[in-house]
Length: 137
Image (cartoon, rainbow, N blue to C red; front, side):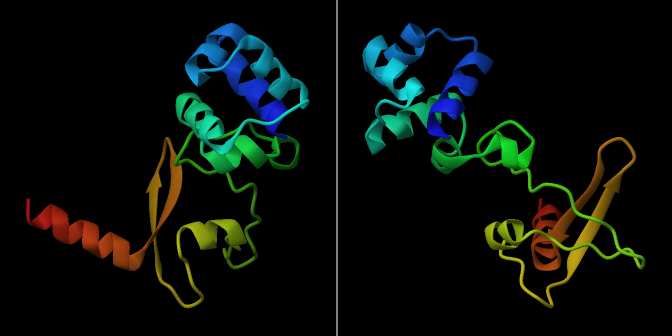
């Protein structure tokens, strides 16, 4: 997955192997070996690549775009896939989303909506904290 992700991200940034290799501080041949899967970068070089390509290190190394059906999201952005709305409007939040955003059973979520952009969920406690901050401005 790393080699495919590296190729995809390099091409999205419209960079040649030589240009990306220069940013990572390696030769074009080394970058080529990473892209063909012949070798892998050390953790320091992988971190440099992830930062430059604006993705998380975890996504650079292991994101599976065939499983997700979507390209690698930018750092700090997440695509959790599709959920189905039940008869009574309930949805199941994917486990990875619950883990990242620390959503536990019994938590209250505030639902925000925008006609043009859709729905957003935010934990009630985070929403109340945001309102308090805005009140104090």
